[in-house]
Length: 329
Ligand code: PBG
Image 1 (spheres, rainbow, N blue to C red):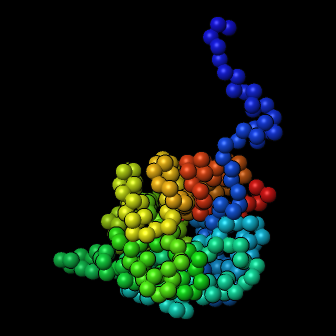
Image 2: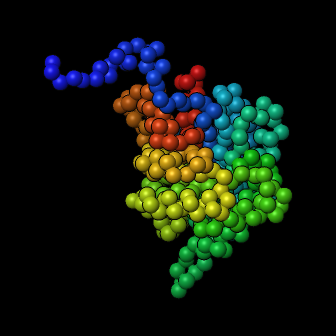
Image 3: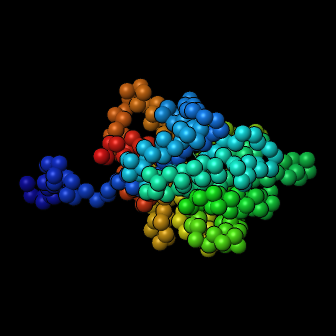
């Protein structure tokens, strides 16, 4: 052979060699597990499009949280299904709201100290119309009003922080909400509560199953006037820059798999902690393939997560968190 070539296979010969040169690690402590809290006792209602994911009453959620802690997960991301919804979404900031009650309960449990409790801040689960902000009519047509939405969002963040959230995570995509939330937290003595901003959140078909899980589908129209257009990477960088300038401590990218390049670009550009949210549709499509025997569950799951770590995500919000931790043990 005249042409020299590299013998790349030398370092792939044994599991020990492969392990020694592996560039990306995945650990349970980097995984965040979402929980959907609902009223009642003993409720464990499976989401039809997300096998293995449930609406949980607080007693059941506490059991899940204990398992998450035993598995060494990094934390939980809490969503709520309120008893009733209204036009303003008042259940989001109610002192006895479902997530507020959940936080109080989980915070009391010493076995959960290792978990970071992250509270999603949004109105869509709480509004009768299912939009992430407050509506107002222009020429007889309903729109989500940006600035009017900042008030209830900030109020919600303060209420969740008071109830025990270690981090608040606004996912509504209103402009200026990070600044409004930061100001409100500081004014109420919560200057140490970090903000994890869903800075680059794209309007996505992959949120479909979540809207069943959180009962948060918009009752008219869609979210394209506030969530980002999936074609835009530069705009995502501006969103992140803006949120950091407003005081975000960390950022979350979502969805994950179809946007791995956006995660990479953000990682190269910003020196803050970055998470990726492997959303409901990403979970659902993998689960569907597993059920049909079309993909090897454990390998495909871990590959999807390592890929996001390699793209630059420091931590990952995933419905596979418990399964992945078991596979990694
Ligand atoms: C709330 C919110 C959504 C998700 C997280 N927070 C839904 C949406 O924007 O419609 C989606 C998460 C998932 O699909 O797993 N605004």
